[in-house]
Image 1 (cartoon, rainbow, N blue to C red):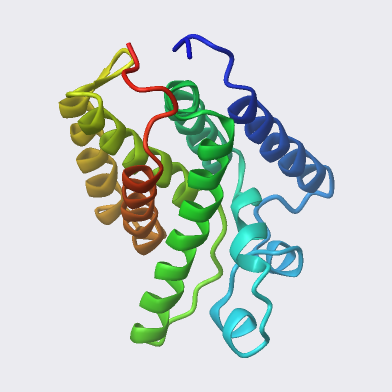
Image 2: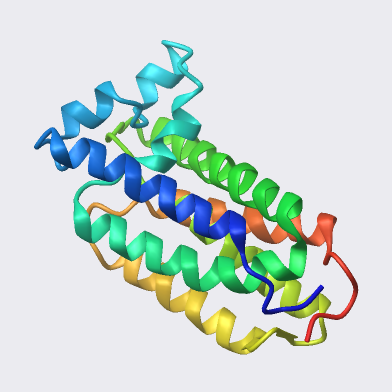
Length: 197
């Protein structure tokens, strides 16, 4: 599979995220926590006691304002356009959604341990799953994946996690959980066609 093959799923995911944000923005409530909660954001008691497990998925398509959306979509594009051609569409979507759900589940467990339940939303758990998968793919491909080196990806991951830890209001458990899930999923799923140049 050619590395420069169009990453259709990545482009589609960005389009859906932007479309959802614009629909919410037109309501004038793009940064309204209660509004996002009513429309699928993750909140521990609703998921655990209310059995609203769908929130583990729907929260991945909601963002707290334009900056939050843009940060996640830039990273989704940068990572997805490199990973999707290497893994193929089906594996890519499995990593994105299963990794995102896994990251959200880790966040939920962490919140339960700490007995603190903030409202959570954003694609970053899934984006970090892509980052973890890319690190693993680089290892599987002898240190490189497309134009990216394993060392560069590890540095990006460390800096991204450090930035999250040193910032307020960031769901670091979802980031770290997503990264680990993505790495593990890629280790199982492998590359689509051997060596990817």
